[in-house]
Length: 179
Ligand SMILES: CC(C)(COP(=O)(O)OP(=O)(O)OC[C@H]1O[C@@H](n2cnc3c(N)ncnc32)[C@H](O)[C@@H]1OP(=O)(O)O)[C@@H](O)C(=O)NCCC(=O)NCCS
Image 1 (cartoon, rainbow, N blue to C red):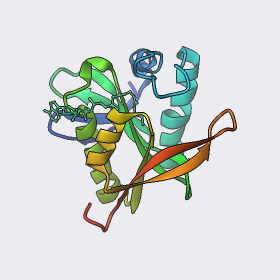
Image 2: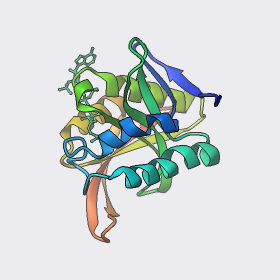
Image 3: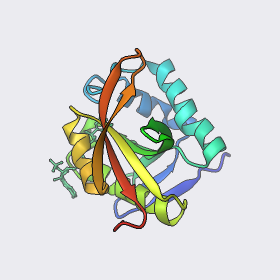
Image 4: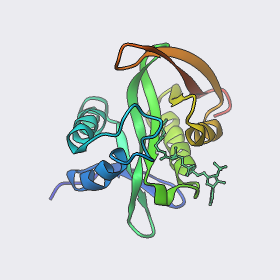
């Protein structure tokens, strides 16, 4: 039997590496129009698997981190994902904290709890000095989470998949400035 790697625990949550058994629940999130309303489009099952191959399974191998499964410690339910991946920012590729929850679990503080635990883990266990979150200008729920987790924000421009220049908020935490 495969060993499942636990990453961290918080009051109500446990984060662990994603496994293939989690794929149907995650495909539901990335295929849902409400969950993906601030993204260019929903992802079908194949696109979700490709995305998670890169940002979870291959990232675990290459970097030792990636998107992790967010588990309710009490019920054992998978609520969504939260984790750290390498993303392009104004400074090149750097560790970025992201989160996606199934809508039944919104409005309960789970994303903030998981993201705060990831930020603390990044600084105290992974040895990172800076952690960011990239958030679209329209995604107010995510901005609220990032605003609670990070210390400050900037705006930066990046190219999207269609080659257009788009603006994004870059929320920033640095280890030695009041983490
Ligand atoms: C972004 C996303 C994770 C935010 O979810 P969320 O439920 O608003 O965020 P949290 O889990 O941190 O919950 C915070 C809310 O729960 C409320 N809450 C209720 N019970 C709470 C508790 N026990 N503890 C803390 N907060 C609680 C808070 O008041 C807060 O409400 P507010 O944001 O209106 O002030 C969610 O909208 C999502 O998954 N979206 C789709 C994917 C996405 O866009 N991801 C971000 C990409 S950049």
